[in-house]
Length: 512
Image (cartoon, rainbow, N blue to C red; front, side, top):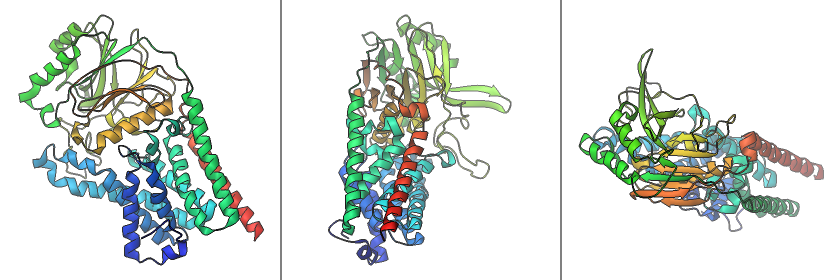
């Protein structure tokens, strides 16, 4: 099927249903190539331009089906890495890999299906159609990131995660807003196929204005020169395979690896270990706390991922935590993960679903109260997130107590050397841009990185690399519009697009 060589929407509609379905699926898979680690946004005009052409002027049912197939292709290819986690304990969970990924993809595809059905209901075409199309897509991404605790993975705005200038727009409108602008720029070129002179002038003007605005905002922001900090961080990447992480036979070796790497020559103020670095309850292990105190320089702090437990009214509550341990071996602050992974850290609807969670442990985790800022003695205050929490735009910082930097403790060993860890890193980079704060990421098997408030990677440890990373902590940038107003900036750009679409349609009706 040819989409962009003089073809018009009526001719596209004459293509057979099977070809349209396969075409929509292929376009969805192609869109993944725009995202990290491929980072080739040049494919987006083909992917979204093609989807626009096979849905514009269609019935809600046919447009919704095309959107669903596009979504299935997009999620099946983009989330294929999830299958890796089921083979960590292949005897128990290996059989679930294919149906789980297929089922998740089919379910998530309902969001683009609804977006395309809504677009078809608008009966819009031309430049107003491109605006409505982009609005429908971005609203569906926001809903996907919100409904049933949300899963905003691989947002289209991440196509710019590896590009310094365009990704700065996320500091103004967030990743959802950047995705809206990206889809609009991808669809506007195909509206030129209508060969309507007035519409073409509007399309070219709008495309130029949006692209120039994104470029100008990006260059102005990158011109900022924040003062350096005098804080040095040391990230330890133990590189322990997930199958060995909790195995009793490897326990002593795993602990020794983190202690030995941490004790390497060099000065630091903050020592950072990844999610669940210690195979047990470190806050209950006095001997381990003493060993940590022996290796920490005076006045320094260890931030480490750790499982913790405490009695409650129903028995014992378990939490996925980050603990701050000082050079005397005392725990001076705690953070508990508040946005838990379904089936990984708890089983939703447990009374109805007789399933075990994929991760080791005695029970479901209990969520913490929410984003928090820890005040560390003599060090910049830090905003904490654990693994999956870093994928949620606007939900990694306590808005009432802005930190000086962000720490994400994660363990991507579940997913091997697949696309997953690289996509996860892209999310962390976008959170840094949105908040204007440096993000430091400690990952068990990689990718560990220090990211500045512009989303640039200052230093990194690659996948499956064992080692330490000593780096000055980048300075915080001034609060961004997104950090101050959150998703209100996204709502404003949505409203502007809708108003523009209505205005253009009104002008067109008056000319008829």
